[in-house]
Length: 115
Length: 115
Image (tube, rainbow over all chains, first blue to last red; front, top):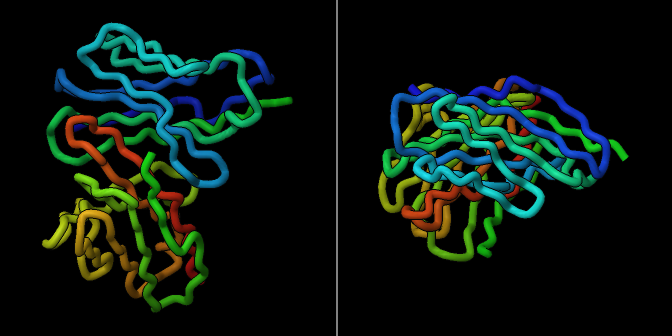
């Protein structure tokens, strides 16, 4: 079975600072995708970044980057130059490649950016 | 990018009644799913909406309680039947546009409160 764990229920960061959100996962499979989703108060789930497990290079999207450690089954999200609009719930998610429809989500981290 | 419209955005319902939630995408999609997000919790997959056939339900969810339709490649409905307060949740429509891409995109969600 696949599981995703986010051990930080809540975090805060000062505007313009950098914050890292943690995520670990468990699987016996070798081919999968990892995602970070953002859910602001509007409820809209927004894809922030995606990482293919077969790629060693960490994915980046503007101010968002990941630290993917496959051996440790760790997938953390770094937000640089935090902005007030980054305040949201952040969910880590996992999906096996080309196998079924199931996306496995962590329990989320509530991030507050302090002005 | 494509638009995923979900309605109603919120509703307050009486116990024992039913509510149908609609999800409309402005382009054809490969896969459509329905998720539930209970207060303060992560996302749980209810079912995969199959075009022209019965939905595929996850463990713990049944067709009598959550009937789903998907008459074409751009539209699906989820009905929450015989509601109880325990059904109070956010219900999210989600889609995969390209099975090779395997990114999950979400509608804006329906906030359901059952009294």
